[in-house]
Amino acid sequence: MELVSKPSFNVIGKKVSCTWDKLGIEMPEAWKEVILRKNEIKNRISPYILDVCLHVKNGEFTQLIGCEVSELADIPTGFDGKLIPEQKYVYTKHTGSVMEIATAFGEMIEWAKENNLTIDPEDFKIQFTPEENEAEGYDLYFKVL
Image (cartoon, rainbow, N blue to C red):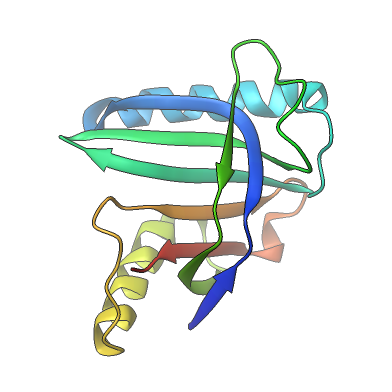
């Protein structure tokens, strides 16, 4: 694990806002839609599908499943675009199962505490998932203040 500064970037995709108990229903549907419609997203610059947890407020999660793009133009119907500003993150490469990603984020929180870093209380984090080969692993970022 390490502390990194990630430059700003743009994401276009499907936004999901719901409570924790609905995430298990809403998120798989958003993933399916983005995978089916990814060719509608113009100006893609990465072979990854991103899961960006924008924030958690009052028990409601707001997430954006999408693709990194060079500009926020030609946003397909039903999709949203978001500029993610340059920020500092705890970063790790997760090579285990997708089912173990929550554990990896927990380890990132512990690492941040051990290194006197403050994790964003609004739970801003990013998961880069390879489109073709999950064996490549997942790039995980957890915003620090």
